[in-house]
Image (cartoon, rainbow, N blue to C red; front, side, top):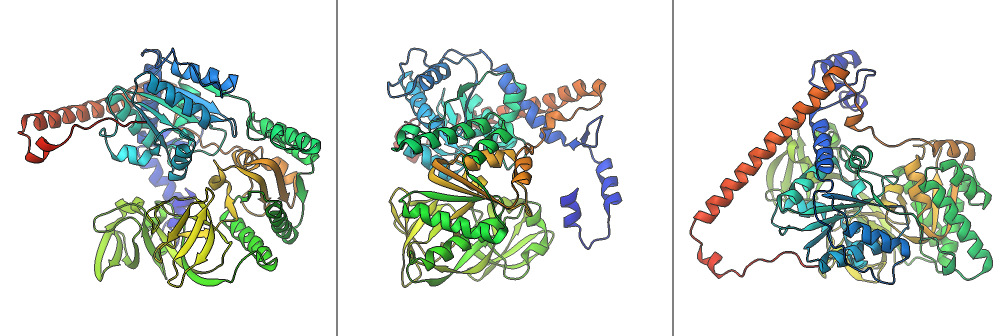
Amino acid sequence: MSAALERGRGENFGLSDLEKQVAQRDYIRDAQSRKITSRGVLACELAILRAAQNGQRRHDPMSENHTPDSSLSSEQSRAVSRILKSRDFITLFQGGAGTGKSYTLREVARGLADGGHPVVVAAPQHQQADDLRKDGVGNAITLARLLASGTNMLPHGAVVIVDEAGQVGGKDMLALIERVRACGGRLILSGDTRQQGAVAASDALRVIEEHSGLRPVRLMSIRRQNPDAVSSKESKAFVRKYRSAVKAASEGRLTDSFDKLDSLGCVRELDAADRKAELAREYCEALNRGEKVLAVAQTWNEVREANAAIRDRLKNEGKLGESTAVESLQSLDLSEAQKRDVRFYAGDAKVWFVRDYGRFKRGDCCEVAGADERGVTLEKDGRITTVSHRYADRFVVVKTRQQELARGDRLQMKFNGNSIEGRPIRNGELVTICRVLKDKSIRVRDDAGTIKTLSPAQRMFVPGYAVTSYASQGKTVDTVLVSHDVEQAPINRHQWYVAISRARQKVLVLTEDKTALRVAIERESDRELALSIKPDASAAQTLHSELLAEYENIRAMRAHEQLRTSHAQAASPPSLHQHNQQPTRGIRI
């Protein structure tokens, strides 16, 4: 409602008109409240649930005789064995922050290969896929790439491992399930629904965890905060207590985790100005100790303020080189609905393509020539093209911003692409500037020490000293600094757990109001599932049956069309190109 009213500002309708329109739509309504959902979202969740339930104990064990590597802990070894002995179509693997899921998945992939299974490893984001590859978990790819390839990427009988599955929305999860079923494969979903979930509609992993009855394989022991990794007796005692606070948060004991950190002196109460100064001071001190450090905030306004304060401190301490002014592109972070609103294309707005569309290639930045209800009109190479709002997922709306850069500055990349050298650049990746060249190319070094050069056209980045809690998920540092502004969006339980668990050795939380923060971290952040909508009891079962029947009819039609296509291809004579081709092989890990 609020989003619709915001979009309708200045137009001739109000709340009562909007409520009347909603009442006329074919929404599914809760019998005891005003909650509603769409038939499409509910059908998607029901189809995911049915796939999980119907696949229970329908298969042979994946690799029941595999002996896990001796370097794994006993808990990790048991998890590997349980996963490989699973007889379910979908196997759930849960592990909290810092429990060693990646190392366990690496051994699972090895066990599957030993059992003769083709293995495909995927993750929602490029950065996550890169991290999996660095950890040796196969040749990981993004889920978007896997889904875009249709069934071509999945050899018969493939086992697909998806890490960070909690960030996969319902539509993509259902598409993935259909792809895996089509190749006669199996699915392993690794994730933690206590951390931050999907941006897209429906938290698909929660649908399976909460409603299917599947028993997940779990890792409970936290390995990131390791007392044996520090030297002094005092440091060991601190890390042990810090780990206890993270453990409490992972188990849902949020105020207990707060109290444990507060007793360690890790929660400080400061006014807004002092909080920013203290954040910058602690950041610089961590660098002086030779530590890897990250600041985390909840909103982009907080992140921008934290980045400015830290950079000013570094500059004053002489830790940055001479500054050069460059023009960068800043995403407006518009929703799909907002990108259909012509008012967001006023002024100096531009469009940056994140996916190919027609003559526009990923990485193209185009001037906006106009926008209306049909779409957005863009200029490229002197030609004008209107892109329909239906393809708004292919681009982000950006504005230019002057930014001072110097040797030693930290940047967070906000695009996917390749450097001038052909090395991958990933959205969310943190890098350090080595040099700004005369042509305004920027030479940077990633955290693995790899040198990359950004071309003058690659300007989608922001300062990278501080990031949002969502962007921090999956990162590991020595020290994490958490900034909480009570005047802006209050932190919730997922954000608290993700933020405080990033560090190996030290955590510091800075806030204006300890009492308000302690209350805020209990705040629920899970979106309600469509399955939680309870229509009139007499109609609920009929409705669910109708939706599932509609879905099965669509599946049958797709299968029939695929069969016709494959028969037509088999009947046609091979071309010369086809005759000379080498036989294709499945993905090798």
